[in-house]
Length: 189
Image (tube, rainbow, N blue to C red; front, top):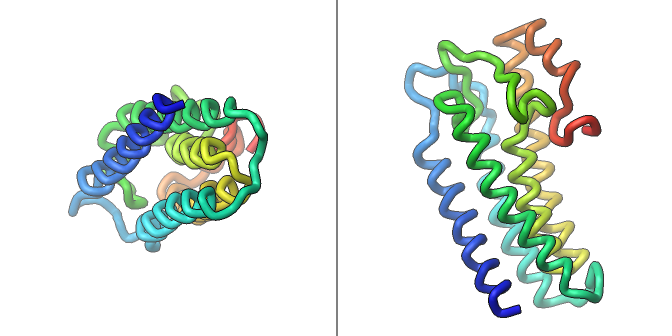
């Protein structure tokens, strides 16, 4: 179990460092249409640290286990690692079109391959998988709710803002793409 706790600490540090890197290095440039964000980046940077902090504190202060066995911690850690790694791969696949703020680049196009063939917001989906993993790792129903719900609501707001910007930019092309894909979970939602 001690190895799992060490892995958890390392993955949480990697999560924070990667998100901090994205926030500081992958911003829109002065030539981009960046008036669309509506504070979604700030909301995410409030919601996610809040959810992590309250979920961890709640796991120490309350006893409301999801299951009595330790396997759930391993599943949670797997989700954390998958979320971090796959989100990184998705961000890399978008290249210059990925920004942390809602932005339309001058030569922006709609990506339809890879994960984007099945869902419109895979980067957010895998960020939420990391949050879900945290809640499962903590093995506490309250922690699970606190780890997942605030980021989910923040991403839901961001998706609404982002999709409005895409419809304004791409019109029927984006509406057609939206009709043929799901937001966050392939074939479901």
